Image (cartoon, rainbow, N blue to C red; front, side, top):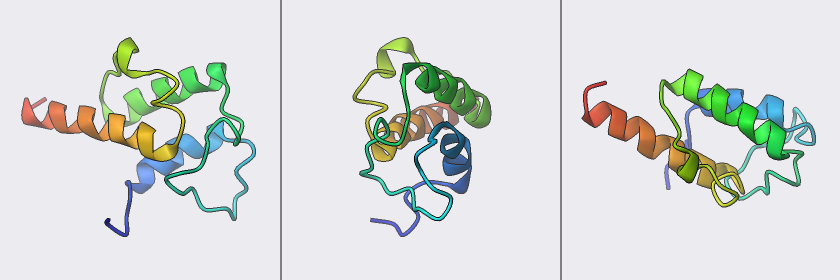
Length: 90
């Protein structure tokens, strides 16, 4: 696995929505986002912020409990959408 799991931009967008993730605590791929304070309302905020930050549209069917369960699952979804956008020259 790469030493950089995701770009800093992803973490910068996600961190403000995680009130129980301390400033000195690492955001690791397997953390449970719900345990870190991500509720359903915050998840919508994350979705909007990620869409704006990465210039993507996250389809409703791609944004479910499994997607927002861990940083890794969320980044996997975002990365795929970014790659798809790049492949289509958008």
